[in-house]
Image 1 (cartoon, one colour):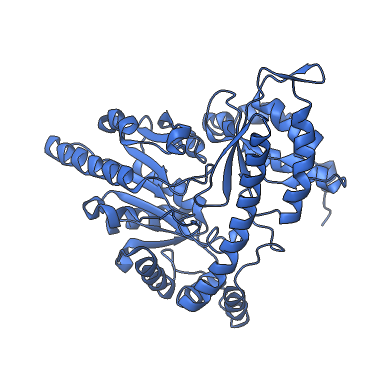
Image 2: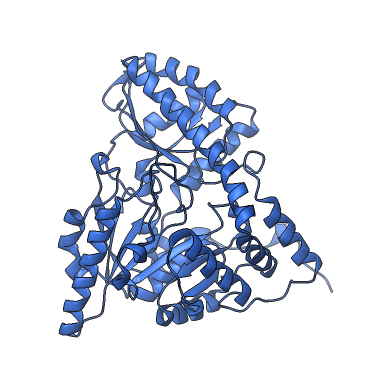
Length: 436
C-alpha cells in the first residue's frame, strides 16, 4: 500500500487550527522556567561558559540517584515487573511510604491514605481538579511554584498573597486569614520553591488551626469545607538548625483537610524516575485515584518495586542523604558566602541564608540603573545581562507569580558543580562593577 511521506502532509493553516482549540489551552502560558532553560542549553551547546542555576533538577554526574534504588529498579526490570501497576500504587510501596513518613515525620497514615503517582505534578493537578470547581477560590502566596498555572487550568479564581523578605517569602496567618472564609483551597509549600526557606512552625500551626475553626463554622452553615494543599516535596532537604514539620504533627485535627505532596524526585535526586505520592483522608484519596487513573498518571511499575525496596532500607537512605546534603549545602554556602562578600564590597546584592531545598533567593538591586550607557529597566534585563555577560543563568521571581521588577531571582544548585560556582563569581563581580 502506498504511503505519503510526512514531509508532504498538509496540516493546513496553523493559526486557524489554534483558534479552534479550547479557550483554556489558548490562554494557558508556557513555563517561563523551561523557556529560560532552553535558552541556556543552546548557549552551552554553542560552547559558551555558563553556570546553569535555572531548573530545579539534578545533574546525574553531580548527584546520581542512590545506588540501592538504581539496583532495585534494574532488578525489577530484569524480573519482568513491566506490566500495569494498580491505579493506587503497589501495596508494598504504599506500606513502605507509610513507614517512611512515620519514621521521618512522626505521623502514621493508614494505607488507605497513600496514593502513588507519576511524579509530583500529577498530584498537584489532581488536587486542584478534585477540590476546585470553575470560579472557586484558591489562595497561595507568591513567589511560589506553578500555583497560578494550575489555577488557570481549573478555571479557578486566584488570590495571590505577596509574601515578604522579612518572613523568608513565606505567608503568615495575618495575610491568609482574611481570605479563608471565601477560599476552597489554600496552597502552602515548605521548604519553599523558589525561596529555599521554611515556614515557621508556629505560623504553620496557627494557619492550620484557623482552617480547622473555619471548617467548623462551614459545617454548621452546611457549606463545603476548605482544603489545604501542602507541598513538602523538599521536606527531607533541610539544613540545621531548620526543621521540617508534617502539618498533622502540629495540628492532628487538620487531618481531614490536608492533602500533602511528597516523592523521591527531590529527596533522592530522582526527577526522571517520575514517582511521587500524596497523603490525605481516604475519601479524598479514592477520588484522586479515579481521576489519576483516567489520566494514566501512574508511576512505572519497575520504579515502584525499586522504591518500595529502597524506602524500606533506612541505612541506605541515611547514607545517601549524608552525601547528598553535604553536596547541596556546599554549593548553597558557596553562593551565599560569595554574594555576601560582594555585598560587603559595596555592590548592590542581597540574599537569604538558605534553610532547605536546593534554592537560594538572590536580589540584585539594579533596576533604574545603567550599564555601558544602557538603562536597566527590568528583572528580564538583569537576567539577560547575567547570562550573556557573566555566564550566570538564573530565574526571576516573576516566573513564580511575583509581580514587579523587584530584583529577586531563584538560584538552583542541583545541576552545577562547585567549580562552576567559583568560576562564575569573577565574571559576576566584573559585570556589577560596570553598573552605574
